[in-house]
Image (tube, rainbow, N blue to C red; front, side, top):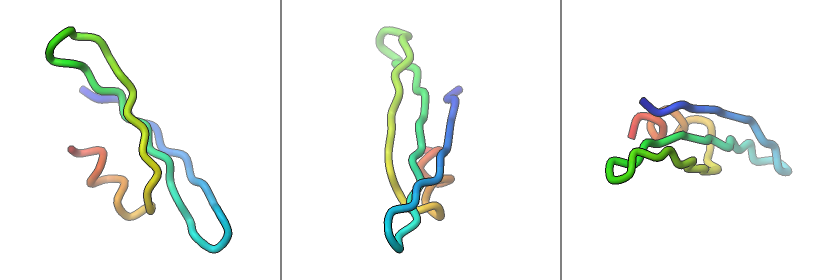
Length: 49
């Protein structure tokens, strides 16, 4: 299962969120971190992928 962390960022008039997801590689079994900066309403959809 992926572990998740979310931090809110504010730049000017836009409100952005940085989401970090820990994903297990099916090939090696090692965990990697995937980061993305997006609007807050898209975070849950991104984490479910």
